[in-house]
Length: 318
Ligand code: PMV
Image (cartoon, rainbow, N blue to C red):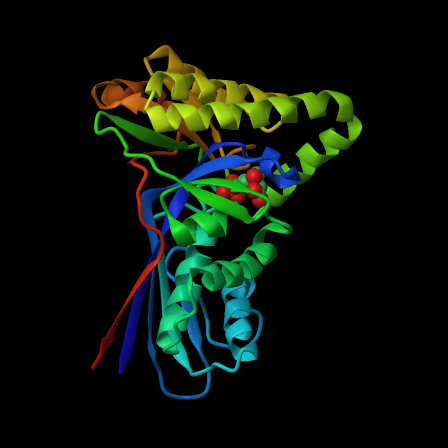
């Protein structure tokens, strides 16, 4: 029997979400929350995909519902000439629709796992491209930032499908809190809302996009210098820009303002907004106090750190 386990990280967008959709740069990092996909042989002709988080199973027949993106990945492999029945189990610690890249990390882990199961050495670029096809089903026309970071990991500077690594040695005295509002929202709707405002208020919005671009360049310098106080300040400015393009909600503002009031260096929406998550840069020693002050506004608070690694796979033959 062939057994494959693959694992891909979630992400947090540090700077540039939304602006990236119209070609601005963004900075993103992987975080130490993962999706794991386990794949093994089964008898018969069909494949079975089960998601422990969504609590649904698709047995290769009928409507796959929310598992459609992964069925799409199976089809892509089939079009490339590869198919063999399998059983796949998806397990994720990343909450759904909360801005931490759960769908992309699942798509990447699934694509990499399936490649390994079929005995293929596809390379990371191909894995990311296959996952992007699944992301299109979930998000419409995503920028591609999510599948890229789930594939490569680390810190990336991302622009129009191209990216370069940013070397960052994370200082041990700092961490990130990711406060999930628990309000699920659609990235697609948030992106449409912003694009709509861009069409209506083009001259003002252009200036905001210009500022967002400048912000990313400054943030690169702060990250390289490990200047955490500047990084926090730039996160706050980025949040202000996200407010001005219309993707905040009162629940997010309560988390952001209370985090800052009780000592966070920076706090901002991460991802599409309108719900989802807030990322908060804190010193380790202030973590507990900040958590206690924001916990009433969040459904869950994750303590995370940026990680260096992207998708990994391992295989066992028995
Ligand atoms: O909230 P998420 O994880 O779906 O991130 C969305 C990021 C956007 O910039 C708003 C959209 C995109 O495709 O990049």
